[in-house]
Length: 396
Image (tube, rainbow, N blue to C red; front, side, top):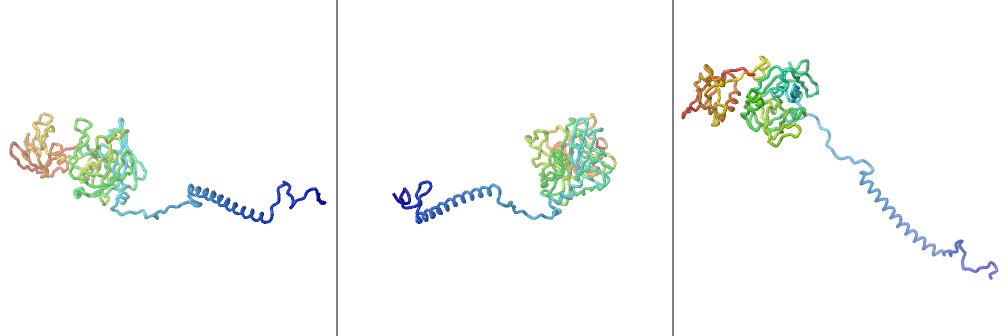
């Protein structure tokens, strides 16, 4: 035994009985630990980087992303742009809500003067009858009750009046005789009760002879219009609204559309626009509106003959007898004075070909009482030209 203890060893002992490493071993282990630590740090850093990257990808970075955007522009637009025309015209356009005992309706109109007269279509106010109500809503939201001043189903025009409304902005009237095919136009109205709706297009045709109405079955509500045709989208509720030129002047009153058979709305049963809209020329509407305001009734220019509306040939044939059994050519009337006879077929009006009785009425209604018409007439095998002065008859 060693005199200093029971065990002999080459180095000091550890408490767990494992030999204590030498200095060289400790240096090698330290270097290894540093390498492992660096690897671990890299792995941890990679994990943190991946987590931070995922967070940035999900949340857009440590600061919010701001996308580039144009600076705010001045609100004004060129006067002849669609926006400029709309801004000028909208204060003069109104929406009409008509409530009758059996039906309701919505349409459009526009202010004619500072006294509160508003022009619209007859078929817009028709549901009110004699006891219904008409509410006018202006573009700013103000409402007023209106009364009917006068209406005419033959021209499909009506004038209503509001009282107690201040600051009315009358709509300037243009001249529909100056309109050319291809001219840009803007329509304003309340399609499907969506007030202040603005659409644009062009004049796609002029002098389109159209008839509308006829729901009564006796012809008393049929309107005859020598219309302006437009592709500006108009729909039910646009009726009575203005068709405007590039100077924001009224050139027509939107009144009818041609719809595709499959274009009916499933909820309302009303068909939508297919780009065939028709407007009453403002020159005709102006005369009728003035008469309705001044007298409550409009006059119709007449030839003084009864037409055979069942005639299927080309042109408009004068009937054999009037509806009541009297002569088809009214004694002393314009036709009789000009030499028109029963059975004559009228083929042209002022050099424009006509193809039916409806077209003859439309061409006649486009004039004023007292105007001269030049008619081309076929009688037997002969063709002759007749000039007559239009007479006058009261409308409804």
